[in-house]
Image (cartoon, rainbow, N blue to C red; front, side, top):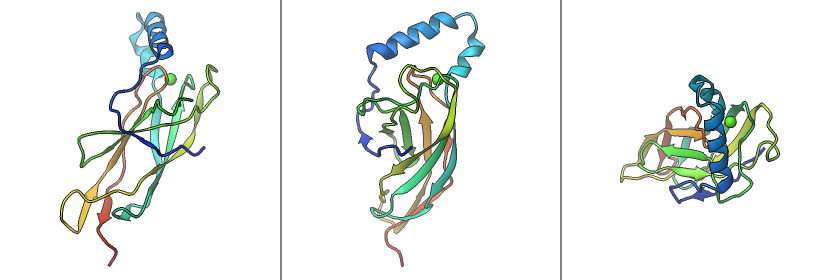
Length: 162
Ligand SMILES: [Ca+2]
């Protein structure tokens, strides 16, 4: 499934009534078994990232993320509710990406699979002819559980191809 690549610049996640309700319910169910809470969160890994050598402002990067979630509560129908956090290691802030629902809403189903995210072309922050960076990713489920954080291999950004 191809995810849209819009960047949502607002730093705070939108907490809908449904999300808050789900968190409250989970808190009730697992309040005396904290170990089980770990199973609520999604797990991700980087299946592939390409290319690792890019020209500033020119080459988007395609990242295939592998996911697993015991409840299948991944992705949001609302494009204003992004759930994938992406951090360029050179920057302080995060970019948020919208991931559409990976199962139909409200169906509880253990799921695993891959989705692709396209990162818009990176840019050089300084005046040098090249910079290196890494991208890290964290996926949140609809209950607000954050996955493990995965970090890419080093990406080299050139000002021009010589
Ligand atoms: Ca989950």
